[in-house]
Length: 344
Image: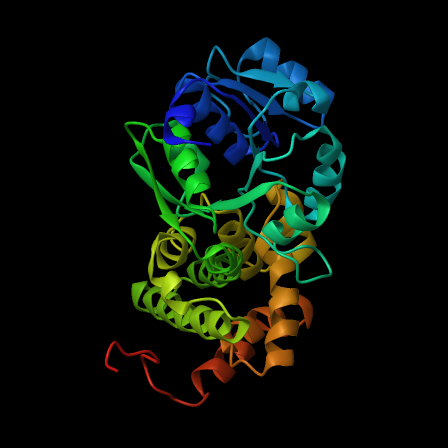
C-alpha cells in the first residue's frame, strides 16, 4: 500500500471492544476512514450503537459519529485492507483463526496486544503469522493509555514491521494533531518490550501500596529496564530498542500511574488482597499476571538473571510474604549498574 493510497479513505477494521481498540477506532474514524469496530459481545455492541459511547471501558467518551460498531465479524472485515487486532492474549489466537478466512491476501494485520500467549511463549505477531497466510504483519506498542488518547493528550507510539511500506501506511492512517507514530524494524523487540513492562508495573504498584518513596520507584524502574534488556538480548532482540518509546517510555508510564491495570493489581496485592480478588476487582485483563509465569520459566531456561521477575513470581504464585522477598532482593549481589556501552 503506497503513501497516497493510505492517505485516501480506506476500509479499516478494529477487532476488540476494549479501551485501546476503541481509542484506535476513534482516531481512524476521525481521520476520515470507513472504520468498523468489532465486539464479540452483541449486547455491548448494541449498547455502543445506541449510546454512542463504550460505557464499559471508556465511560463518558463519545464515539466518533462515523464509527460503525458490530458484533458480526464478516461485516466488520468485508473489504478491509487494514485490520488492527486489539484482543487480549488469552483469546487472541481464537479470534484471529475465526477472522483468517475472511481476510483478503495482502491485508495489513497490526497487533496492539501487549502480552504473551497463555501457556506458551508465542507473541501476538507469531500468532498472526501462524494463523494466516499472505498477510503483512506489524505491531503497535508504546506509552499509550487509551483514556488519555481519547482525551486528546499528546501521545506517541511505535509501529514495528519488517515491511517499511506497512509502517508508512500505519503512520498515515493513525497520525493526528495529538497522536504521533514512530517506526521500527525490530518487531520482536518492540513486542517483547510491551509484554515485559506489564510485569514491572505490578511491583511498582506493590511499592506504592507499601508507602515506599520515589527513591524506591526510581530504583525499581531502572533495574526493571536492565532486566528487560538482558532478557531481550538472550532472546535475540535488539536491546537498544528498549531505550525508545516501546521500552523505557512504556515502562515509565505503566509503572507510574494507577491507570495501568497491572499497577492496580500490584497495589491491591500490596494492600493484602489475594491475587484472584485483585484481578476480579480490576474487572479487565491485566496481561502482566500471566506474563510473570511465562517470563520466569523462560528466564530460568535461558539462565537470565531477573531478580525482580523472580520476586514478583514468589509473591504472586509461591505464597511468599512481601517483606521477606524484599529483604532477599536487597541482600542480593551488587553488580554493575549499566551493562551496555557505546564504546567499541
